[in-house]
Image (tube, rainbow, N blue to C red; front, top):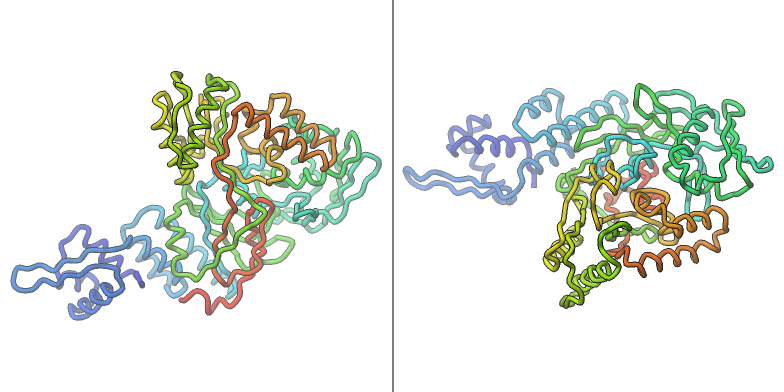
Length: 522
């Protein structure tokens, strides 16, 4: 299916004009005979239906069978290198949606960028994000979208790779009593060319400790100080190797502020951002060379993403170590009693198990369930069916941006739908050290006890405290798991060496593109 600019021009023209063979031919600057051949060709490709009018007064009719704009944008992006700038500028004058025009402009910029660099091995990739973050502050509530971007623009002191710690910016570390001395590589640069200084790292850690001072995770850090331009000291109450694992969390990312914006030292930098599109390009000062994928375009229109790759041969990659988790969380201060929460959870299990719900308790209190928009279809179905079972239940949908910006207490919710990506063996530890869960559940003594065990005890104790916390939440009917599922990645066949972090977030700079000439069907 080849939806080029002629198809799109015809589509736009027929929005406001009836089909007339001569007039359409003139508009497309072709002969009527050529138009007939094209219409028949497009009909064979199932782009449109064409009915030729027979006899005087019988008008021909054209109706489109596809989303012409999306397919045209898809065609243009895949073939943008075959257009000259004048032609592209003419195309941008054709009426289209703002999101399509933005995407085309970004791809034009990318095409020009490649030509300026005179490099034939520059490639861009498109990815879907369910929302485009407005700010890349590592201390903002972390969701999948923000985590995806931070993983590809930032460095942390350490990187968690399965059961090992690595680093892109620490050359080595050493212990002096209870103090951890960190030696930085001397050639690390921010995306603007500035050299990374130990004082930048100290500033980031100090801000982190100030923001997270209520968390037991950082309780053992007494202070941080600069020793030299490439060396710093983290002073601790006692020597503990786990501090390095803590410093691998994305919230410990290294950054500096320039003109009110955060800049980083990672493989990519933000090039442009809008409500529905963000583009990151490779950081020319990155310390590990130029990646095969030199830019990534993120869109929050899933249909646009799917249509873009519909013409490519792709493969699925199932991640065994990363799990997405959807669950309903009850407000610990809800008006609902323990028995009422148990009844609601019982109803949810009936829905999920396909069993007819037989009420055991009547709930007369009005209660509110808050659901962020763009939740999975399965979750939406469960919420709708649950709402039908309880007359006093109200569902309120909110945008993901509003959900992330507001404290959970400000939502006036009794129940909230959450979706998180968590490590199975550190489920509640993850929830209590990042994201929104902590806004409701930091204060209970059992939460502080769990953080204390992680902070003060070895890894052998962690499964016990996780199981104990899980029992507490379920026995008190405070949580109900809706689904746990593995993340599945979709990439073109010629993408190799796809690497992810423990949460299944892709590092785009590690991808190697092979045999491109035979893979894109261009």
